[in-house]
Image (cartoon, rainbow, N blue to C red; front, side, top):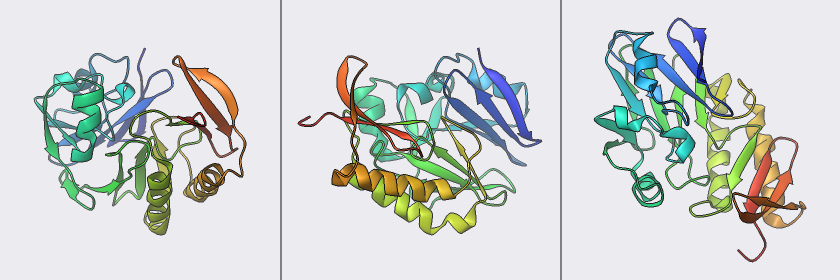
Length: 232
């Protein structure tokens, strides 16, 4: 079941089991950030809130973020995510490319794209400039961060976090797709330290089986990182 929650009169959050997506409303159009995992009517849910034209942007193309993409003739996505969306996920549909630093204007509301490769090649965050809110997708959260399997890369992830941290003065609150919500910007530095400790071998992981794959889980306090087993 999808639960609809109001953040303010122009910002809404849809909660599923373990994942969330968002609706941002401007003066001329509205934007869904992701389209859910179990939800089959994300666009219809948004239409219950606003009569404005509704667009969709994907923070990345993992299955828990793209369930309702088929409701849209076209959607926004970073081109580096095509290998995930069309390749690994075997999805269809047309996308409009968004690039790092690009601003999407909803009418009096600017969303700036921030490239966040690492969790997936084309992961992005979105800065709601005027509201000083960051919609972070999966890379910034205090839940479980998937860093195992195809397309995940810890070096890139750390560099993305460091770059994001350098502009943390531009947002006051973070709305992630998983884990606690909202979060404060200091979580970014905690995730940097945790990821560097894992990459350097200073942290110890616990062997687990996840989706039939042997992985190492690192409970780092700030978040739990699920990583490839040694040798994979």
